[in-house]
Image (cartoon, rainbow, N blue to C red; front, side):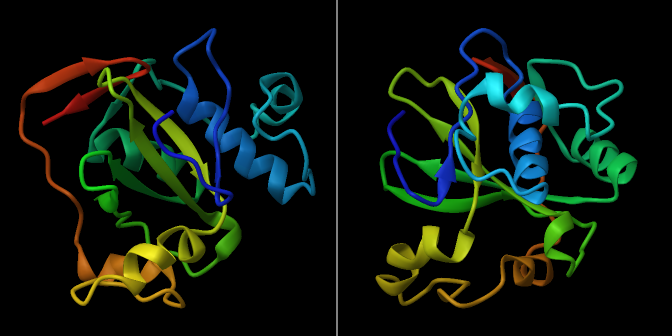
Length: 175
């Protein structure tokens, strides 16, 4: 993985393409008080059925419709950020239109691309700390370190996608 941070948990799911499901399991595990071994699939299995993922196909297709189905079925909001390896920057890829101020229902994911263009979801444990270096060094940043990520819902309506789709390891992206 080309990115490391104490504010991101990487589910080690080499045997399947379900990194999105495992990130949701991490969120559930944290809500249930689990604090250790959250990257280990064997520890996450008991938390993996907490969310209704009926109809979700893996590799996951990132588009507004698919994300909205998961959000509506589970009364959650999902924000997806992308780590750009060239610029070493994190930027919003999808900001939920299902705005919630309830922190337990707000899930922030980081999509990471490696040097071979493989893509993988990771779970963001603390968005503010994750971007603190980036925001402290940027005069044009949309968020400052103490801002809540939900503020982005007011800045961006949602990221739009074109109609082309590309298959990457673990998911299908629409561009």
